[in-house]
Length: 103
Image 1 (tube, helix red, strand yellow):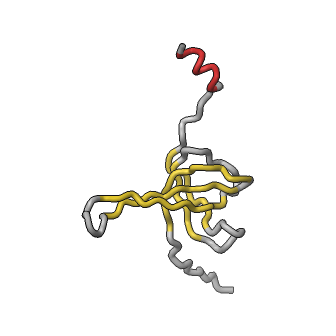
Image 2 (image 1 turned 90 degrees about the vertical axis):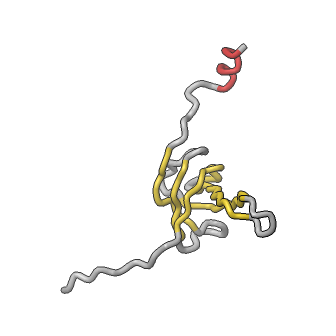
């Protein structure tokens, strides 16, 4: 039997920030791009949100992640988590305690 390697096609990838942990194994990633305005030639931010599959529920809001295109996994999910680029700093104390210390 021959050992055949199957060449995988190039999958589009995006880098963005997790803005929501929508449900079990689902994250919402906001991708921002800067494009020049056609008339005024100033840079404008364009944002788009993608629903992505996070198999191990390892992402939190604020993480920077890389996502890759995949087959449709549900009505909205067409992307999967590729890697976590940078983890967000999580609050270790409750927000009420932080507000009380500030006063």
